[in-house]
Length: 93
Image (tube, rainbow, N blue to C red; front, side, top):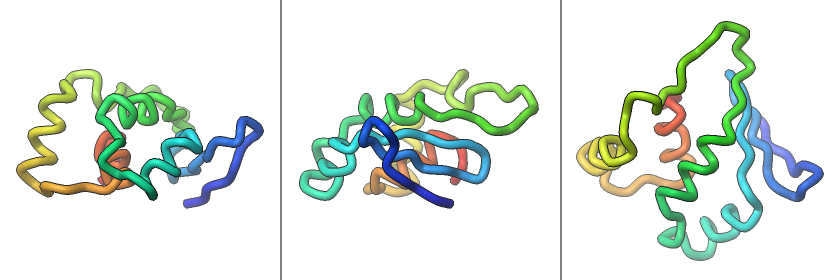
């Protein structure tokens, strides 16, 4: 929905149900060398998700291993952008 630079010079991305923080170094790497974005780095960004939903919600990835998500991604769409991976990890797309 919206993004801005926060006081730590990282990007905060406001979503319809919360927000995530993306390190500026990761955003630069996505532009310069997308292949350098590892699943661990994506997982760290996904873990920064802060839910604005007042209802208790279980973590989307709580019962799913990262390997299962990787396999799903490879079978459905072989090459996803950083944003697509984040949205998928957050269960938004």
